[in-house]
Amino acid sequence: MGAGPDADRRADAARVGDVVLALDAGAARTGLAVGRVGSRFAFGRGTMPGGDDARTLEALRPVIEAEGVTRLVVGLPLRTDGADSPQTTRVRRLAARLGALGLPVHLVDERFTSQAATRALRSSGLPLGKRRQKGRVDEASAILILETWLATQRGEAEPSDAAEAGRGRRDPDDSNGPDDPGGSDASDASGGAS
Image 1 (cartoon, helix red, strand yellow):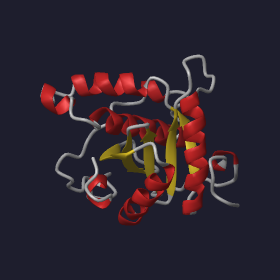
Image 2 (tube, rainbow, N blue to C red; image 1 turned 30 degrees about the horizontal axis):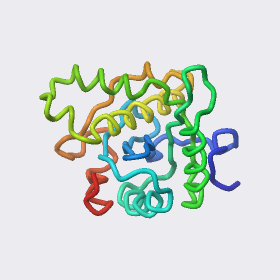
Image 3 (cartoon, helix red, strand yellow; image 1 turned 90 degrees about the horizontal axis):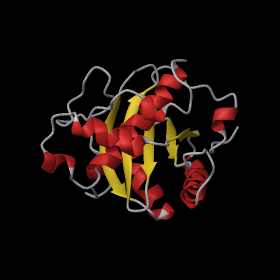
């Protein structure tokens, strides 16, 4: 049973406690979030440069090692009608390449997560300057993608519920909370990219 984007269809059941890394893979930046199967929460891990699959794979290796990641979740940018787009093709290609890391790769419908992330940031109380920082929405989108996938693992959501998932939260001081599987920041692990 090899890893790859079809892992959801295989008998590769996630186990409680598995550490999951989610990616909101964009052309400019890739937002990251981490969480544990069985938890309701995902924690932002910053962003890394997007658009170059080989560079993304290399930048993810130290993050995966530092966080103890056992599976990956990748947001799939479908059109509003559910059809594929050029972005969808690019993300499917990335997901297939992520299989080379030897971890199960799961695809999650990410329609409307950017809008939901923007709303969540707006209502978060963060000052406008912080909300507008490059990558903030990408990271928040990755949180929503992962929280949606975690909810499907608990049987509480359908795979297409990404936009309605709970509001993600950022672990700003990188302290280990009760559900936080680590304390490192992805930008640190990827050579300071943000």
